[in-house]
Length: 398
Ligand SMILES: *Cc1c(COP(=O)(O)O)cnc(C)c1O
Image 1 (cartoon, helix red, strand yellow):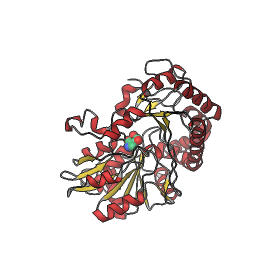
Image 2 (cartoon, rainbow, N blue to C red):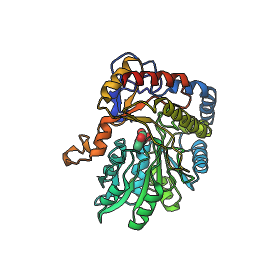
Image 3 (tube, rainbow, N blue to C red):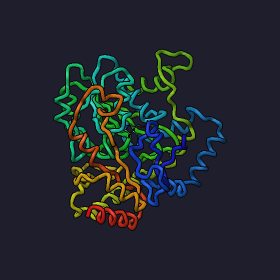
Image 4 (spheres, protein in one colour):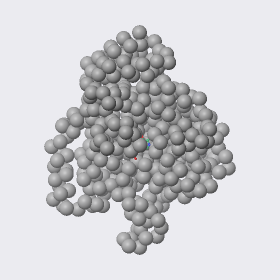
């Protein structure tokens, strides 16, 4: 199996089940000139500080659950504005552990969006609960809250909203609905580290929030990692206990848990990167604004819309909808011009082989899968690169 590379070249679709890779453009073709995400550049810029951080871990020779993890948890909690942050192995584990900490299991239903990375639903199935899907909003690509409300049953225990591509879901309305109907809200903020709704950081508004430090995420480690946040001390204690084999005290295991620790080297790298996230997210917003200006008058392309005042999206992806039915041809044309693009997600979750036998249908989510295309974006993307991409899009859209 090929090693997993994101910056500088296409992700390999043969490892698509290990990662959030969607359908890469140029599988099997020569390397594209413009990647989806240029991680090489970030690494080059941060290398001296990152090497120093790694060296300090080596000097300490404490590799698991040492100072770096503790300090990352404190710094992340402070940045996000939450009481507790628990560093974990991955965003997927954060979702699984959040569900277990909330006491969700067999017999319970959890509502989520069918237009997300599989891990969101997988976590629900993993704890033995039933993932229930609702329809999405074709403008925001997020869960449609009317459809969510219609999907509630007496067995519904929780909701997992996904802030897709870094765009905040309407949390005020969701929290109002959740408190009326007695639902636990676990935010999947894997793509939205640093995003805000109503002046609060996304991920800190529900009972628990889950982030991923997968390398391609807005705040990415140089390996796997994740974070669970909550203001509830009891949930935090349970999550921390599940992280280390269900024990609060070493060798006094109280329940069946996991080995889901973040390692010290990743924590040290993340501590180098965390102070930059606010500026990087602002740079992404500026890059998105530039795309908007460059693409707004191209017929047949629907661009991401503005968020309500007080909200901040973080453009994990810049995703357009191609309304002329020629999305795949457009993607092929871009690939021929050396421009990477990617389809997040080519199949909605309810149509994946794992759930297909349920025969569910959500027309809007299915339509999005046929129409969306994510364009190259990263904080330092240059204006002339975006102009070059826009020029080819304009030509190809005829
Ligand atoms: C990346 C991602 C996850 C999983 O995070 P990992 O760290 O890769 O386990 C979950 N949900 C969404 C929406 C994601 O994009």
